Structure formats: C-alpha cells, structure tokens
Length: 436
Ligand SMILES: [Mg+2]
Image (cartoon, rainbow, N blue to C red; front, side, top):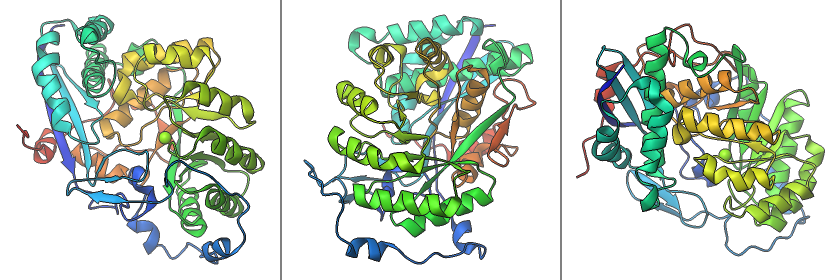
C-alpha cells in the first residue's frame, strides 16, 4: 500500500480555555499546569499559607550553586519566552506542534505528530523538503525500514536528535496510524499486540508555594487521578516544604512523583533525594543535567528513591550507554520525539535491563497522546503515562470527537489506528503561515 502524499501542518493554538503556562512564575517550564476551573471551585478548602512561615524559619539546607537557577529572569520575545537564569528551554505561550498527514494510493489517511513546542515551521520544512521525497512511493508496511532509511539519510550530517528526529518520528506515527486503519485494528495490535486495555495516567501539577501545589493536588484527586507529578523548580528547602504539604493534604494512598527539571548539581540532587525518601515518592525525575551520565549513575546509586529520566533522548543509539550503566531506574521516551518505531526499540532494550517505561508526553498534542496510548497498550514493561488534565481541552481543538482519560485512565479506543478523528477544517484554522 504505497504512500502517495505527505503534508505537514505547523499549528498554534492559544490557551483560551485554561491559564496556559504561568510565565510569571518559576514554573515556566511545565506545560499547561494552571486551570481557571480550579480557582472557580468552591470545594477546594484553603490551607493556611505556609510559605511565609517557611521563609522565616532558619534554613535547614544551605546550598552552593554555580548559577542562581532558583531565580527567574524571564526574557519575553512575544510568541516565545525563556528563563535565562535556568537550564530550561525556550517555550511558546501557545500550544504549538506539527501534525503530519500521510495519504496512501488506496485512500487511507494516517495522522502523526512531530512534537514542536517552538517553531513548528522548522519541523514542517524538514518534512516537506527532506522526508516527503524520501518516503513517497514506499509501502506503509515497510514502516521500520522507512524509519531506518530516513534516519540514515542524515547520519553523515550528524542529525542524531532534535528537529530532524522529531520530524521523522511524526511521519513514522502517521504511517502506523495508516497501518492500523488498513488492517482495521488498533495500531497497538498492528505493532505486535495488546498487553493491556486500560492505561493509567498521572496528572501534572505545579506552583511555587506549598498551598498552591497542594490545592492543585487536591483538585486533581477530585478529578479521579490516583497518581500525580509535581513540577517544581525551587531550592531544596522550598521543595521539601511543598512535598511535605502535598503529602499531608492528599494522604499516603495517592502515588506522588517529583520532576525538578534538571535543577540540581549531582551533590544537591543527592542531598534533596535523601530527605525525600521519607515521603514515599514513586520517583524523582530529571534531577540534573541529562547529558551527565556518570552524575546520574552516582545519584541513582546513592538514593533509595527511583530516578526517572529520558524525555530528551530520541533513539536507541543514545540509550545504549544509559541502559548499560543503569544511569537511571525508569525510562521516559517521548513518542512524538522517538516515533512508535523508535519508542518500541527503546522499550525492548529497556526490558533487557529490567527497566520500566513511563512515557513522557509533556508539550505533545492530541495526536502524540493518542500515539502514546497505543504505545503504552503495546509495551510489556509499561508503568504509567504522563497526562495534563488542564491542557487537554486546548490540545483537543483539532479533533471532531472528544478524546480524553476518565478518572485517570485511558481505555483502548474502539476505532482502528490511533483511534482519533482529526477535523481538517479545524486543523487548517490553526495552521500558521510559513516563516520563510
Ligand atoms: Mg519531565
């Protein structure tokens, strides 16, 4: 079944239905954590503010840092912004991504997504200029050889990661959607089999004070979530105060994780991790520079707390050393950066090392979510999938039918392929003009 056409749609959707990213706080690096609905709710019981108290008391944890990375220096560039004091990335104020359409000669349409949180036009150009001519005329059932050939086409140029791999991953997902539709089965089944019909997701929560994060935790539990992940970018002292308050508010029956977004040197990450152990967290995520593999090994071996990492790595080639050295305990591939083919390769190798997979979704859009769901259904060593209750309405704007988790669980969709229906009229409405 030959591929006849490939089209890339670079899209931008404003966060009208929620508060979007909170660029005035330190939590700029977390996707769509705020929601107006929470602040409207009268059911949220307010705890006494504890932040002032925590500032007044003497510091238990003095820290030395090479940069003032707990402070924020926001550079606002209009559509985009960055915290120049931190290690974190440039972000868009809107939801931006690149949706990819693959059409076969027999009329089957597959949809994919190349995650593009900033400059989706760059990704779309790569698809149009390089991947489209490489892929047109090939058979959709040769999907793994297409992934390999497209990867190899830029090997000599050194494009092992970043925009190029994102773009080829989006094409890969679209081909897998077409394969599922052509066989009238879920993509997960076409990929080799269904390991589970329900996938548990966790909700991302944020804020910079204990009561702010605890409010959001309580709101998420009210939505049916059994697992929550805090996105924090605070010093050790404030991080511990927040975790303490959240744990107190939601009790011990809710699974709690913490993502500190590369905020610490190895020694500070170990210092924090040791004091976190009593809070029974399921994992500490992205404690330090993800390229410092020896540092991650040291953090992992020093703590009784599992370390999760890997949302930046895109191929099995990058993962080899990480798995061999057991640099961390839980692997977090992002399917809109690895593709379904690359993600499956990573999960298979992780299984050899008894490392579970907890796929990252983060800034990915609704096609990425649907693809990650199929991946989670197909992956034997799957653990938990990331989700944003707050961001789903914005991400779903391009769909003709609702697609969301219920009570913190996604079920196997009844439709073939990825199980979603794209409304092309809406997709075109959000497509941005080429920048060149
Ligand atoms: Mg993360």
